Length: 275
Image (tube, rainbow, N blue to C red; front, side):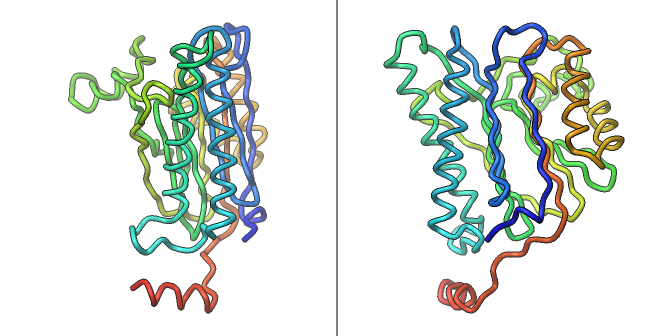
């Protein structure tokens, strides 16, 4: 099932004004309506290695598995879409590869990466994330953050020590509590959300979210959404204007038309058998 005409995609990654190289990595498969973004960390160039391994592994394994297993059909055994499981397994595999590479290669000790990835199918979006790279949704002029950061600051907000407004002003935003590569296993947070025509989804690294508050992100999406390329350019521009202290990566997906799952005879028979 080719979904390319159901969505509009745009993306941009930038080194920023302070770092001397880019440790973010991004990739998308428009025909499968998939995106993946990673923000690496570690020693000299090691963050770039970690994010690159994460994106390549997740992209390759997800593309292969969804082509083989027909992800557009419902996974009736779990109630989740098949691609949600595929995403989680691919990220878990990427975690093992990064961890093993960090243990066995000089200069890669302690490297790791955050990740956020998604696949659209059957008028839904399956999302998987680890760390503080984020996914937002603009719907009916309202901006909502879909993911919650795996960070010390977010835990303090959840426990009532900080309000969201106080957290936005905090200087301690970068203490993450989950990352790929830190351990042999990782807890991948997965969820599935209903999609509506006209939705715009924004995936970004903290090079955007630390420099630009949600209100300004909202204003930019609302003002320039007729051209997704203009949105990505403007978000990177204002991130740099606000200091550009980290690498900046932005990925946008706009839903242009409904995309229901295949309801052919074989699919209906398979669902009846599994009921």
